Amino acid sequence: MKGLERTFDAVATAYDKFRPTYPDPLYRKIFNYISLNNSSRAVEVGIGSGQATLPILRTGCRVTAVECGRDFSEICREKFKAFKNFSVLNCKFEDAAFEPGIFDLVYSATAFHWVPEEVGYPKVLAMLKRGGAFARFANHPFPARDNKPLFDDIQAIYTEFYPGRKSKPLSEFSMEQAEKVAKIAENYGFSDISCALFHRTRTFSAGEYTSLLGTYSDHIAIDEPTRMKFFSEIGHAINSHGGSITVFDTIDLQLARKQ
Picture (cartoon, rainbow, N blue to C red):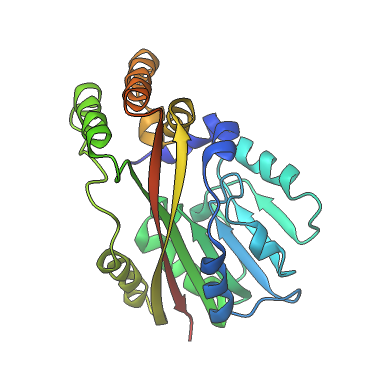
């Protein structure tokens, strides 16, 4: 995965269009865990194009986003320009300098896995006030769970065009996996740890789905002629099985507190 975190910025506009936001119950869980208002301060690690940002901003909380992608940073500055409580640092989280012990919330949506564990967790802990919270959440898509012939055809296409890639997802993200991620924070001195799962479905046409695939880092890294043929075959498979594909999302949330 090393180096792939910078590939997303090359498709920032498509990423903004096709990557999903996060469900309201997830934010209710966060806000029940940590109260935010216009005197609060938060940092978002890896904002991307801002899929997770608006509900936090609407609390009045001052949000500083950290994003290594230049195009992503510009998209977010424009998207949230009406919010005087928003700013962006265009750098890697590992390189950003923060005053210790001043933040009420540090959160990261489908991004914290790019930060080395041994760097990220101690840094977050140092940034937080006593009683402050770390919220880590991520989306785990399972395409065509309800359509085995389509699922099998897609896996066969991956085997042909992407040799060596482990076919995924073969099962939905589980509570056991969420709990395993949650326990990482305990190893670095966090407490009051909890986790939760949320579910939803999204339906795409063949063209929409291949556009979505084009925002995934490992797909961006495929050489263009192969990628175009690969996406064509995926689109053909979808059109051969009814013309649409349903993605079953599981979103996991981990919450942890600095005592």
